[in-house]
Each structure stands twice: as structure tokens, then as C-alpha cells.
View 1: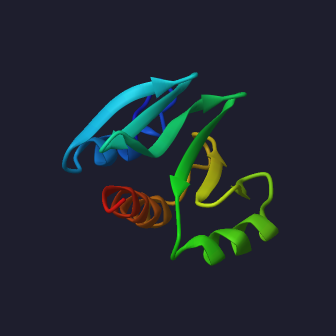
View 2 (view 1 turned 90 degrees about the vertical axis):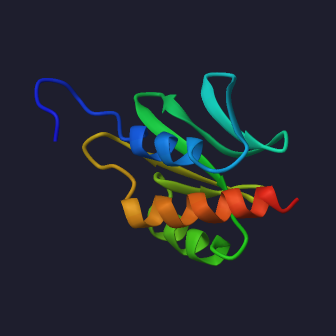
Length: 112
């Protein structure tokens, strides 16, 4: 853990997203946008004092709906296929969850 300054909980997510094949990173409004084949698979950034990550989900959508019912301030299931997670430096998105969702989001987008 870094000392002396708050850590950015999106840093590892962004790094992994940038390492997939044929990925372009840009911006959309105030969020970083990660794309493959000109289609976004991740929007991520700071928003309203928290962090936000949006993933495209299909297989994990039911799990996301369950999380959203338990923690509606932290997870929202939007118009298919998008799911939004909100988190802070103090309470980041769990790594096994974001890794699974990021892999799925990229794979779903790369095959379109």
C-alpha cells in the first residue's frame, strides 16, 4: 500500500484493460474509455467523489443484479449489457470481481 497519498483504485483495472489485444484508450466525457474494434468495453474514472466503472456483461449479469439488489449505491444494472460499479479508495471494487467482469466485458466486445 502506498503511504502519504491516497491510492487510485482504478489503476490496476486500467492497467489490465490496456493489456488486452488491440485496445485503444481514449476519453468519453470525463471517463477513460477502453475500446477494441471501435467498441467500448470499459468506461472508468472518478465521479462525484467516488470512482465508477462500467462493464458489458452477459453471463455475469444475474450476479450483478443480485449485487445491485443488496448494494444499490454500489452496483447498478443498466440497459443491457451495461453494469456500473461505484467504489472508493477506502472500499475498492474487489479484485476477483473486477477481473472477472473485465475479462467478460472485453471478450464480449471483441467478438462483436
